[in-house]
Length: 237
Image (cartoon, rainbow, N blue to C red; front, side, top):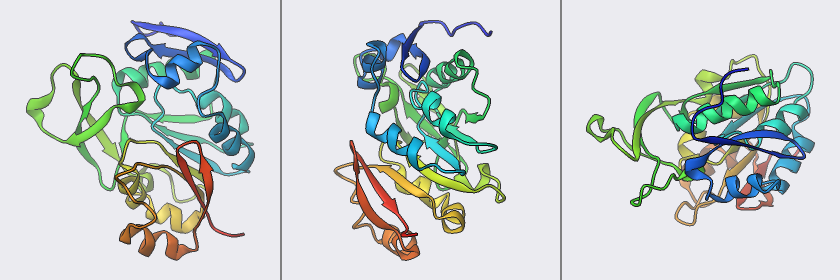
């Protein structure tokens, strides 16, 4: 087994074991899992019950709090395509996979967007506390790679998921970049018509967004409920 990343700790719940960065142990997901609980249990339950035989696209992965559950639900040759741009979170997610012996997850140290590029990620607040899963992306500036920020790679769903893969769920919790990730995955979405689970931001009116209406709702997608702070969109079968 690989050496546990520095400044991390191991926790466990009913789904498996997790490597959690100490820097963001105060964040909601980390705090709940450190106490043996499940973060967003309804979202995880829905994904495990509705993934069928298809692949799952999952971003941002954080320390991998969804990975043991959704990877176990992926049947046969199905895979989980997981994306985490924060380097510390990524290393912990890698260890979470190893702690649970998970082999069907393709984990990428990258964020999802509408085009391949580099962006600056804010990883700590003004007091130096880690933002964990709330790390957010900004416009790339090579001069900004200092404490509390790092330069990260952005990729697209369409370039990462081969065109011969069937995707049943796309779940995006990427701090306001959901629409950009959908733009970069439109070919995959049009081809597979996966269930979309999108974090809802107050300032981002997804349903009222013209691009979303013209490119997603036009495919037949309809809003079908909420899971915690996530909106679910499905195409009627």
